[in-house]
Length: 412
Ligand code: EZ4
Ligand code: CO
Image (cartoon, rainbow, N blue to C red; front, side, top):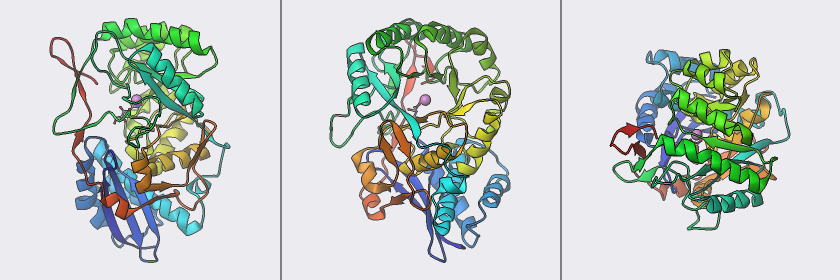
């Protein structure tokens, strides 16, 4: 299984995706996702200029050895660009190994530990009425767990509010949540922590009154709070029994979570912007979180994220893998194979890709009654239609950023 071709394919069917495609001399093809939203071309260059030439002539069956070689021989370790590039290689090699074995990847990881993966979707609305419509639309689609984001009075635009939050067909976009916007400069949004902290508990109270106590609800604070503000939010949301509060602080300072933990029993999920086990070392060991948010795509692939989750399992911490539309169908499939196999699966985030994206990436994973399943095709079960991909050339896009009322840049 000698690799004789390594191609990097960039396509933009509604949003940008970076895919690595490896071909072996005996005809196996594997694909991996290396999409880093808003910084895609850095990963493209890393793969094309620095990794692809090293892969030609190497043995595709040596997944762990290839991972260690790419991580250690670069000398410069960690970081989102490096780890997304390594993730793309790792996924493509697992895809090839599965195809060569005639088995879906989850079988190679130990087989299924459950029948399907409980997934949550993203309800949102500028107002509570819009939010309720969006929650109902998600329930109609089968979602049994729902993330809740709303506007905050006085703020013009805020992370997490979809322009089309009810799945009604809109130019083929089922649920338009993609925060990155095409153009040469990031969009500016506004932020006010006090208004947010006052408003959010009233939203959850209204949602509980309308939808009852059973529905699992999640919320993403998206890195914008200090530890004491996060503690305050967690405490004020306790009556509404959240499944989790996500990214309550940026958590670059892992020990900051100690303070949050001392003050609230609201479960915490962190890690979508982390990229190695080292980012989690202290927060897992000290049991400062409940769910690991990493995506396979941003954390060095299946091989590395499995190690993170095995470490987490010793502390009863579960997976809650990141699954926004900026993770391609290839990265989503990888998450599903890993999630099906591990014992400490918690929940999978699942936003649905657009019809355009689905026309480029043919998937064998399925979604029914609130559960995902990776399917039983050999490998990851996703194929990339290169002709279709070619119809959608890369377009520059940036994630937005925040400024406070006095003009200070704030976490977005
Ligand atoms: O903002 O993936 O929980 N989900 C998220 C995402 C991130 C985007 C950034 O590219 O926080 O919506
Ligand atoms: Co998030």
